[in-house]
Length: 282
Image (cartoon, rainbow, N blue to C red; front, side):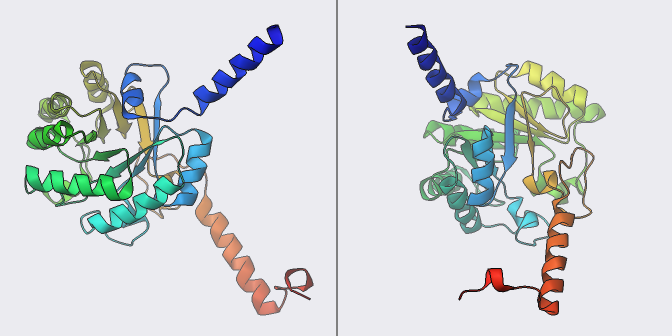
């Protein structure tokens, strides 16, 4: 009997570890000691690795523009590019919640445009939610999407689609600007977003906002007191070149490892070492 009970317990534990992450599950993690983990991915291989390791949320960010597509910033990224990469991520994912970024000018013109594009992006990519940037200025838009059952992740603080207005990638919410950021976060929550990204925000301000909101905050350059954290996978792996914001921790130096492999390959081909007999058909 004890053996059967132990077996049942193990099955339930396994199911718990492999639980499909949904919007309600993420929202319920507010204030939990079990911090929410989120990383960006843009293809099935990376998404599959993250998913197998138990990541909670995979964000298909418009950062695909600067990481994979060679754009100078996120502004040129299109809806079609976002859908293309998100479809690949979804195919590589079983358990994580996949969130698709709405790119620049796909929702800023008005509510009808936002509904049409968000609906298309969800329908064609099979993502579980959309993310869009903005606070009080996007309150009505977020509410309009939530009202037609499109889950929305908000994003306030440093919003990369607004870099021209902000004058570059700068910390937001310092001094008198803190109140503006607080009001932006509250507006996103009131509009019905299930979570909000806080980017490049002073640690104490991020802590204050996290304490005020009933929805989870996910920090990137916002200190350890948020309900979760997100990084761009290429930054984490050391594949983003010399660009290294203070908040980025490089867990691996994959750029050098890849370069080493490429150098070795070139050398062996030129010297006739590869392919050898073991890598040829007979």
